Length: 300
Image (cartoon, rainbow, N blue to C red):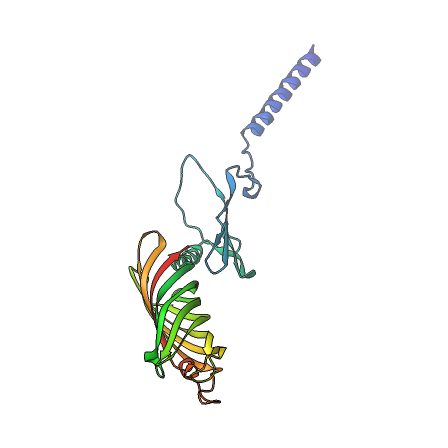
């Protein structure tokens, strides 16, 4: 009987001790999970492809924006970020000029607005000077020897304006004129073909656009007499320098009307004036001549 009491007391003590241990374990704090081990399920990667832009002079601009940042649809908390090292937002630019890529890479988002603004401004300047074709028509007059014996029956031509940048462009020009040279009982008709290129500077970008240009022209005379007072026909090619001044008035739909003056000065491959028996036609080909033209420019 005494042994049974001892066993009962010992069992009760064990049960109390066990209950105390379990109570201490339940009240112990749970260790925090390290911040590095936590996963942000709201972190989202966003890639935006910008449109590919090709400017008038062949500059190709590709833009891609990559954003890696938490997106919280419930609440947006403003905060300041310092972009150091690997930033979470970057813009990649691929700019190609004439088939070459001088610049490619990622720029910090803080610098992106200035770069994109510069590219947009350059595109605006270039797009304001589009490719254009200009039919011209008017009259040509000679100076110097025989100027009052040469009459022009009309001059027509076509000019292609190719923009380079800002106010500078290149003109490719071709014209044709029909003439009559007469003196006393001597008279004949001849044709004049000219072609060449000018460097052109446009001095305004508004309603009125004045411009200046200078270049070189090849002048081909067909049906000229090679000796004085004869009908022996000869053709001659002369090289001439040219200066141009004009103005355009912009209308709607990319069309502009204007006026243009050209002065040409023969410089190379001049025919001899006093060779053989002399030639009044050679004297005319060695003389300056100018053109007064009306223009209709169509831009694309």
